[in-house]
Image (cartoon, rainbow, N blue to C red; front, side, top):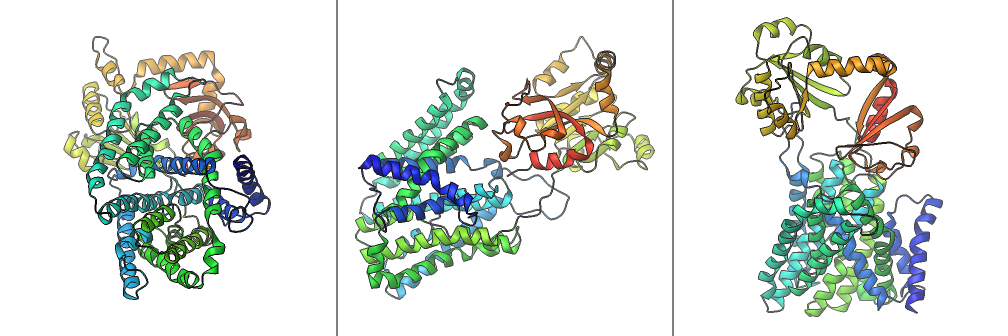
Length: 609
């Protein structure tokens, strides 16, 4: 019978997205639709799916992988200080918005929980607060993925709030269970889980790169490592009395910090969302017995009150999100974060085990969570409107205003580049000030910092003095400028400092070598040089940042008919492009094409989502 139930569940998982696409159902995330399908197939309606035994194990594995992938979605670069900007008022950081927003959830949840105690509905306000602060991270991620918002500021802000709504209630539930159960062993044992995560991170940080070099299709070491991390931390979590999904979430964060390749993330996502996670959502719906809940009038009368509590707990998010996003999207984000189901069911189980929750109260919380889980994403999709997309210009700082740097700075497209040019020579400043925006600054560390010279994506060191450029390159390396180009002419063959700079990632430009390469190209490939000089066509390079293009074959790019891809630069190596070559995040596509299409292509491919 279990095999038949599994076949029914897998058939439903396959048909659900197909039917949604056929009937153009876009307002409901696939995860929510799968829960609704599970309700129909389970004990509430048809009773076709039995959820015990192997089905229960697969469902538990599904939620484990879901929470693991949730941990991998956290963008830790958000926790770094934002660079200073002169383009207007500084935007609130997603991390600060998330922390502030979740604090409002805690306060409102606590207030409503004491209100429930005041009206004698529920006499355990701390436990009720844990329930009201929970957020279904998996459903939120699914909704954000379908809108392509995960890597955008609003998506990362919502994701971080949802992550707090998963981790904080998990830890709080463990602590509350320990205290209410008159045992404090779990409180200090929780530290073991954190120490285990730190230990695994430190041990595998060094060898992860080695695994990538020896990996092959028959070993899939990256996937084996991922599952080892998951089950290692899940086992530790269960042994110390914590919820296993807390261990899975920590495993996801450890895997993210190891810096996995995009192919690894793609394979894990395919494995999770292709098999295990749909089983969890469908089985979650199948486990709900709505007949018993609806048949009890008292439970039915409690549902609206609990549902109001779930929405009131998240209403404080709207003014917080409005600090950065437009009001309609702040409202939409609040609705999406009302979604809760993943943690509600295990939390209610703990409550019943502690004898602080009746079956009627448990039923009211369960059905209210189901309604919130269905309504939240629908309201989010209804109210959400895409934020205006601002194309991020590449910031270039030229140090040295002279006959080499000034013409280049003038010819860089203002649509694509934000140029800053500095010189320490007053005569050069007065000569070029009428032609280009140039600033006068001493070549010292303090003066360059005051001029925001290091706030750039590319720094070009174009002074005619080689020693000056070497000192500037050393300072730029210390300030961790992402890309440094240093001019040295003529090259001193007796010095190894150029090689030392190259070893640290500095791109060394030598006029003699450049002239030799240019003359050779003029002799061997005159048409290539003509493309460089052409006013219509040109050779361009773009970096793939849009996850929508990851895994796509080159021949299936929507703009492939307008360009000719000559090389793909990946992991510091050139890859010969073919029609079936897959695109990876971080790839540099080098291509030729009409300059009129480059802006549209760049906006598509380099969009963070």
